[in-house]
Image (cartoon, rainbow over all chains, first blue to last red; front, top):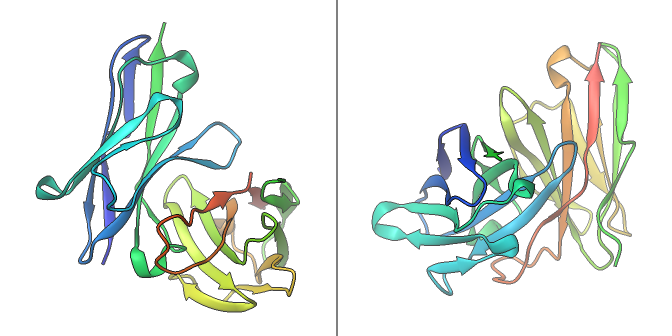
Length: 114
Length: 116
């Protein structure tokens, strides 16, 4: 069965510092991997998606993630945090054969310190 | 192009009642998926409809059901509401092409259901 594990339910960084949100996946078949962001009282917005085309995936708002098969990881990074990045971030996985059924991680709340 | 819309945005019901939530997908999208988000269980997949047929199903009891109309709009119904059904219900739409690298789910703002 597919699953994702997000390490750290809450991450706090200073404005301008590196953002690193960790995600490890478990899948018996090559997966699609995603990062979504959720702002308070809003739905989910896709940040980026891995579909095996390239291991380093660039997304919106300066975020990127690297797919590492040997580590079964898909960590999200951003070189310099901005106050507007404060939100909840979800790592997710789906099977290529069923891309409409997404399994989400438990989420990581990102706080930005001035 | 208009995004995914969900109505109503907020809903308060009492235990034992039933509720119907509505989702209008992005124009041209044929797949609608529903998710439940709670503080305790996180985001969980409920089911997916494609061309008026349920194509995928999560692990929820039969009290949770859905349907899709010919215009791809979808409704989700929960019968005999329980306190634990209080949640944010999100729907997402996509083109629904299986295995397509470029297909992406777009989420609506959600319906917040409170069961008293």
